[in-house]
Image (cartoon, rainbow, N blue to C red; front, side, top):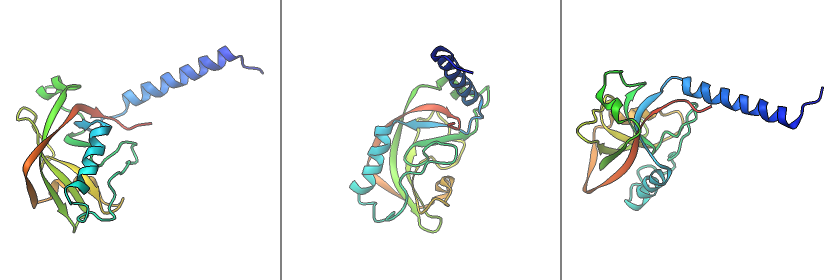
Length: 172
């Protein structure tokens, strides 16, 4: 049996459409303020520029999870999973949000480091300590442990990063 070029293109289009639909139907992993790649790289560079590279020497600054999404210097989680239907923050999905980065914290015992952030007052954080996980001692360390950091070095000159409020689903 021979397949024509037109038939092959149709099959490819159908498969791509099915994969896209499956991705849209996948459960929401978390809702958060997601940073663009250039901001992610800026945060990674700032670890060294601010002299914190000694805190995380040999640690991972990038970690793609099994679900296909970057975990480090990438986002501030607002809630695990999807926001409730009546949550007013849902109306802001897709909008840009400014985060004020106010400090740096490291917990050598758990092997996690993070940026302490202050989200706008109209965006409540349901995951505890507002932060952007920055580094892990190794791939066995879970990024959510950054929410347990208790000691922070507060900045004299906080800075702003901008992200987009999004629901994150697994990447196929």
